[in-house]
Image (cartoon, helix red, strand yellow):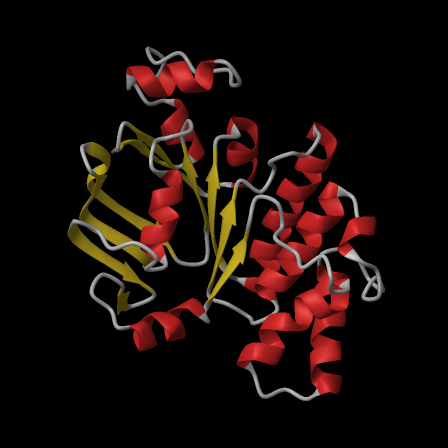
Length: 253
């Protein structure tokens, strides 16, 4: 496996009596697409919040791009978060801003680029996500798939080391979901960014993933390549996948 960009070691997180993650050990490789898969309520969103330091683990260590996240200062977390892009479920675009201003927003807040350089960066990112020339449109005029593409353009405009996707296909029809999956794959190849995708969409996960981690009841029950996860003998993994995938015969070599 490639050098890890994210490492969780013995991470436990509980809210009162509810244990969300219990002793999680996982390494996500740099420059690849890792999918955290599982049903609702299995700790996927908590995993993301721990990764960016919005939550502290009760136990264990978290390292992201060489930075210890657990116990980090606000200054250290701020510097780390500037290297992380985020695509939210609903896109989280500012409805009062044009598409161009939405994408330019992080650059205006966190860079010293002048207006011409920012405009060029926005145009480049829109070209990369297949939406050239729509800077002046408003988010309300966009389809769901277009909003996701604009959100991805904003997520990559700061040239981050990591992009986090929270249910990227949520609310999309199957054809548009396939288009977003293909875009994620192309962006990874073109930009060399480490993508981490949180999802319960089995088909989409296998379409984009280099490695898949499956969470269940706070534990990591499968982790590996698509083929390795498909061949897992864990009963929950097989039950979860069987509704959407043709599982291999485990008795075959």
